[in-house]
Length: 104
Length: 156
Image (cartoon, helix red, strand yellow):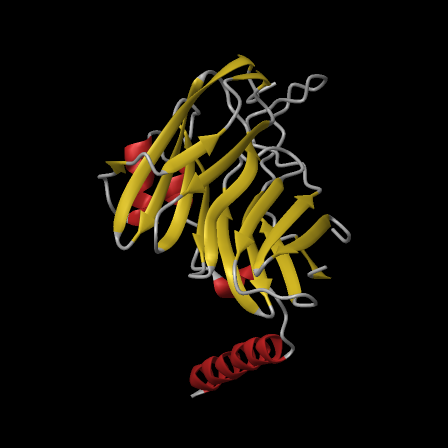
């Protein structure tokens, strides 16, 4: 799952706002395929981590009730221009991706 | 003798693999988070999942937790929710949708320098309260907001 993350970090004073969009089906495991009647197996992101210069700002556990193509936004203080922000996720099938950006 | 050697080999192999991953600075949530709280996410009511996440069953209602969500959501599959908690020393924010089959939606563990603002989008099966539980200084605070759903977002 390469290039699944769009991430942007903006600065206001020393408060950084991280906004991320992740491309992922977030399948609950309760939906049925309309044609075959088969249950579509669950496939959703379980863990998301965001770091600032390698230090965790957010560690989170998600359930299947997060919408498809999840959006996430958090804020933290103590940031400055050019700092590195990274975001990574892992889903229930063990697929994962990560992305990095500079605060601009 | 042989079995012991085998166990020893296994141990060293596994150990070195972890060392390599850490040394390479690979960013992987699996190494950072404790196990995904499966029981909490599968719990059928908020009380049970609260126990799974925070090992507690009491929350204190708080007016300092603001939940921004639409009063009426046309599409339950995508309901934008922003939690804005004006409490000092926030360690964790978790989101519940009361009427969903499994209410727990997400747990956000925040670093001390993170502000109490988290935005995401959630699925809602039907009209329900959205509940945000904020853990700060060992106490759980709760805020809620009702969202009316016209088309459910669970099941197809």
